[in-house]
Length: 356
Image 1 (spheres, rainbow, N blue to C red):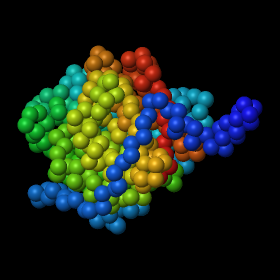
Image 2: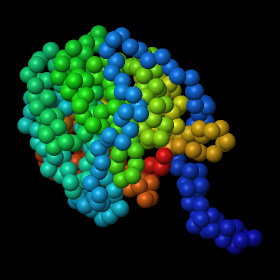
Image 3: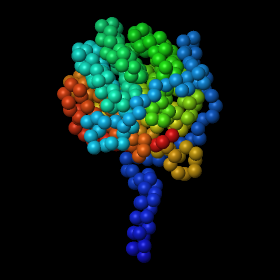
Image 4: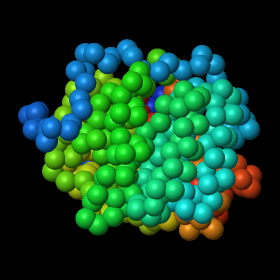
């Protein structure tokens, strides 16, 4: 009987590896999610919400290069289709090290084709002192490198960009809706670009990149839900400033976003944030249809290197292998060539990415 059991186990492992994987991932847990909310939330207007008709923007997003990624960061992996970049808190670059800001953005531009780079996420805290225009000007010029190279990017405000109480005047002046309105991948924005979304088509896959800046409340989550429900066929990646802490736990605001936005939208697959110095990740598995079986995996990742001598130019690159449903995350500094800032297993890793 023991031999029969072993044979059955081997057959299950060969034919149904995912079923076994779901039951053995110690770092993940299944969330029996509430049924998706079906009512349409009210979108806060206030006269400054910019929102495209969804039918008008479908098919307008940037298409990728048609080749596999061939780059030393992913040496030994020949199945990566494309990459997205992650630009964590740049506040000290804008204040004291503008050459670092320019160098890392230029690295993305120089490596755009070999990375098949299709998008870059800026996770907030663009500047250190929101009242100093010189810092905003340095940041604006650094981000303009992406615009000249036609690399789509999303940028949100962190606490250092708006202060207390939240003042979006400087952010909106330098990174407001008018700067991005004509981009073909730009979908729409909320309150002078406090929030926005972009539509990216790459390797036959449709994405919606949805960002919301510092100070997320009822109006912000309602708008996020409205956008996500208008694009149920697109895989959603959310980026906010405050979500996971350095221990890999959701903060109070992170838990609110998880409960009000992530849980109820079956197209959300990835959440990115900065704010807390460190690198961490967390995965939740959802049963969206209530049948007791896993339907959706959501990976949540913290990336912030400001405590390492101001950041030392550390960035992240995420390589998507659609064939095998995997994403490879690489940490790298174009300034010193290092691939680790903190020296732990949270910096270079692979996670499973469900097809949507």
